[in-house]
Length: 366
Picture 1 (cartoon, rainbow, N blue to C red):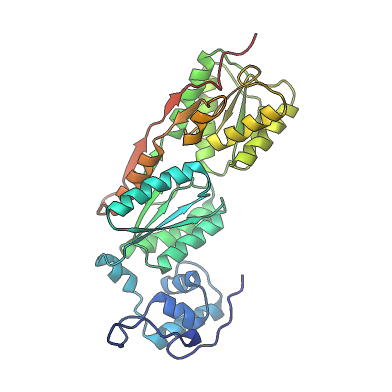
Picture 2 (tube, rainbow, N blue to C red):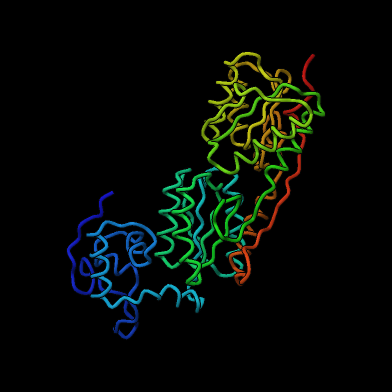
């Protein structure tokens, strides 16, 4: 996307001067001032001055010229963080409308409020490049900490881009904590035991008598998807049960994605007796699809999800799932970001899930 062209105005673009103190003298120059002077975005100005990614030569020259004109001090971010003058935390999730992320964000915000910290929340809608862009913007805003509460990506390019933003941010005093597995990032993490939870669910469903399964999955580039699918299929294999590839249907990681995947599964030959949706939201969509196609749950087909978002216990039938302490996960994630950083290695807190059997699963009909 092309940067807007703004004329450089001495003292700030558009007649807006750099930040001044109460006596009217210049107290400090912010990165926002540099971005305005250069006529570029905050993210671009941050990347140029931190040298974290490739930026067009003309934009790079404009940013450096603006920084020189305004006498910008590149280490102001580190100074603000070191003095604890920054009271904002950036939270980046995949979709805040998803009850899974909303519950985790609630835990983050409750802990932040107890410590007088402001939370800025952004949704990427599962776009990995947008996630990197938001992190760059939060760096430019001098956020005290950055929390990633969506699944990581099985993508080397994403890993390199994200590390290029987070590594220098942490070197200047910024804190980073992530939820779920983010391969390649040297950061503190809260890790749900996704593989183990899915394996426990598989064994519980086999104990009900099921041997013919279908699975509804989100994009397999997401680490959460690969971990839950892997744990489920591996546990089934230990009992001699294998899922045919045609019974694993991929769709968007949403309620509508679950509806579409379940509809597609019904079109395929030899309908399974039990379906595992790797998130509750996909399971909710699948329940609607089964209802619309006159498929009884659990009479004709059983279904189970993962997460235990609050709404699933109120469905008809209520949903069997793997329950995670979502609020507590958010609290623990925020707690990691507020602690003093470890000098030796990244800290990892692992969270176990619990299989909760409800009315959406029953033994297969004869």
